[in-house]
Image (tube, rainbow, N blue to C red; front, side, top):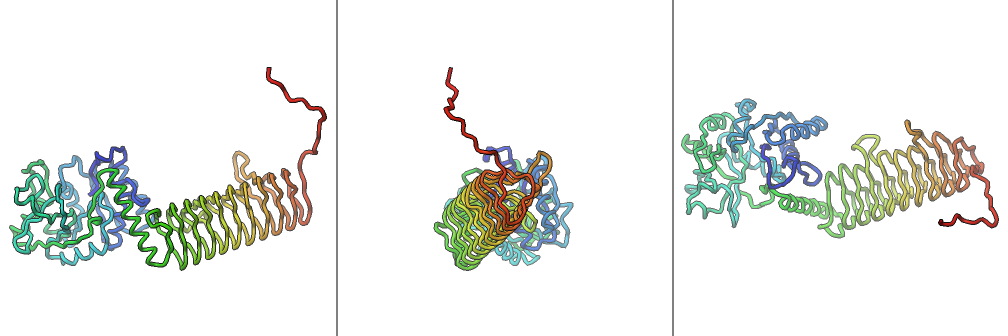
Amino acid sequence: MAAGKGTRMKSKLPKVLHLLAGRALVQHVVDTAAELQARQVTVITGHGAPEVEAALSTVTRATGQLDINFVRQEPQLGTGHAIQQAVPVLRDDGLVVVLSGDVPLTQADTLTQLISACAGDKLALLTIDFANPTGYGRIVRKGDAVQAIVEQKDASAAQLKITEVYSGIMAVPAKQLKSWLARLDNKNAQGEYYLTDIVKFAVADGFPVVAHKISDAAQVAGVNSPVQLAELERTYQKRVALQLMEQGVRLADPSRLDVRGTLTCAQDVAIDVNCVFEGLVSLGEGVHIGPNCVIKNASIAAGAVIHPFTHIEGGEPGSKNAIEVGPGALIGPFARLRPGAKLGAEVHIGNFVEVKNSTLAKGAKANHLAYLGDATVGERVNYGAGSITANYDGANKHRTVIEADVHIGSNCVLIAPVTIGAGGTVGGGSTLSKDAPPLALTVARARQVSIPNWKRPAKK
């Protein structure tokens, strides 16, 4: 269910599209359904339906992970009314798991246990005990058997004292669900069609109703405000940090880590504080990440060191724009690697150096204040401070080739397309627009002139 407006979010963005760990809330739910190997996922949209449907369609088409379809609930007349909209696309031989698009942290293994409790011939409810159950539907039992779910506004004084509540998640055979949905009415305090009313129909029909109770409140926590979203973000990140440390990763402070994608770490990886990992990132054995780094879609090989305040921003995983950092490389501080940067072993990229769509071979160095864009750099090249590749002519990008063992002096401009031959040297301050031969010193700059007794302009 993903039709709600989310008024308390105080945002034009549909609630279920707000991000948690870099993914939309509803995307977390859909991804969990994919883990269950669901035959079909039906998303019920309403408020912001075009945006929600477009966002989910883009991701699922890209991954090809499941069969997803959409139905719309307009107007929104309650949870029962929402599921009624899905009836035409539900297969009679299926088992329906009802999830909420704003409850992102439910675990697949929990749902697997709920499905097992359903077993295809029961109505299974996911429940939890809350010390303060205000606002939740109460589980009314007779012995161990569930008799009803009573919503807060319809509960008696005795029922309000019940601490076991319904999470909003259930598993139910589709054929029975359809028959119960047809019997719903809105004769209640809210004037809405409650999905929870199907429990009393099941009981009346002699159909078993069971509860699978869990104790982890985060798995059933919904997002209704920015405060709740921030709380769940920290819960998610704490879980990721714990998993990483259990694998042997050294985190300087587990509370100051953000993983907004998939982070894979080999042995003896160390990560300092305030680091953000996005997309698909892999860290090889012994990699050290300094504080305040942002790393997206990158593969960093064994022994590399990413110094503080480095920004690595690769393109889509598996594409030519994903970033590769070779073994033993030293990057930063304050370096920026942009899409398509491919750095070989023991490459040095220093402070305030930017690399985009360029390949640097083993041992190449650009230690400070430089730009390498659309360049192929050979082994052991030394690229001087303040030097740039002028790769854009205003319409097209062109490539610069710097062959092995070249030395580029400081403050040089290499106007692409241009090739600097192996072993050559380019004198500091040179602007090159033609190829430079191997093993030569190439200098292209104005002749130094000094004018004696020069008087600066004075203010009038």
